[in-house]
Length: 135
Image (tube, rainbow, N blue to C red; front, top):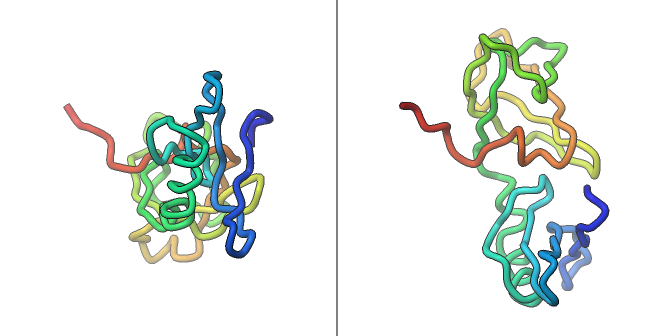
């Protein structure tokens, strides 16, 4: 993650649930989940920490959208550099560590049942919460 983000560990068990991003204003932070997505408005540190306790980990269970090839190759794909023929695909986070998340198609074709792609973190520029808008 970025150097200015502050790791937040849940008080009850010490589990890392997200990050506090300082805004530059004294005592004001933005709550971010483990892949770098904003989970709420900027506010006091206590407010941002409460958001991370309530929604930090559960937010990762959402469906995510990204540009990806169809079908996703078994060897994976570099989702940071989409090709012109890639489509918006719904994915789920299959695994996560401090450097990257592994995603797989939410509704895989039979030939991509074991296919995954790795996205380095933060991934807020690659993974979207909702489907893209179509004009």
